[in-house]
Image (cartoon, rainbow, N blue to C red; front, side):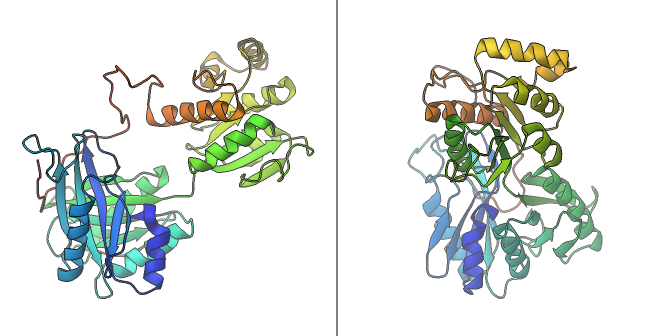
Length: 385
């Protein structure tokens, strides 16, 4: 739901009633991940997607029905061997979808409104909705903030709210979206509930060191991948807004000095394009010791070997060196700045998702490496399989 927060927030401000269908769990090969959503308002306007087109028509009808009867439902869609043209996923996957009405009188409306406002403003928050359990709890929501405070509630056992808030806080810390199983009284005891936790966090950072032509193309690619992109270079003549109009931030400072003072996290990617020892060595010495997602450095194979030796001389260990992606990027035969940016971006995605970087043609490996198998939530699941 939070993936279409900006548009849904506008709907709320306009006073529209709507229903939102959210992917809760996936199995096998599915085009969208948990949290992906499609919403339909009372006039029949639709935004978002839950399957890339496979089941949108059926989900659209479920949303219209939810707007009429006010019922929250959980439905399953999957591939049918008997009838490949039946409503389902022809890619062979299975998805469970929660359909929730968000009308003026619905109990979840205030919490959903607050969650959409926070996500649209780029604030970190998590919304936790019950997707299976007692009918009176279905679709109810809790909004959790980074400091542990929360709004809303389920109207059940008081310990349930506190326990879900704590669990959702852990999801938020990791920037994760997924489901958790918990007892109706907030413990492992009692009737089980399934809760979908959607995290909304600011975009991950991409820091590009070295204001060169290749960096300009990489900035554009990073923005396409929804990174918050910073360009850093010690040379003011090159690090300019004119040269990097798409960058979110341009910093004129020695790279290692900037990296020492700026905030990074486990989603941050660092791309070192300077290939100049006086910049690279102090920068990489620091970068390889930070808990970031990716560190890559540009240069020829000869430059790579010489740079590694310099790094060893300043105390970088072999274990730390093993984290360095150098020469940066996948082997695409890239030559132009745009092709090189694509090569780097592909390596970043492969590292993030656990991909091999090999051609899918002729391979027998999964297409989606980061899909976690999830047992289907209990409750009202209509199967098309």
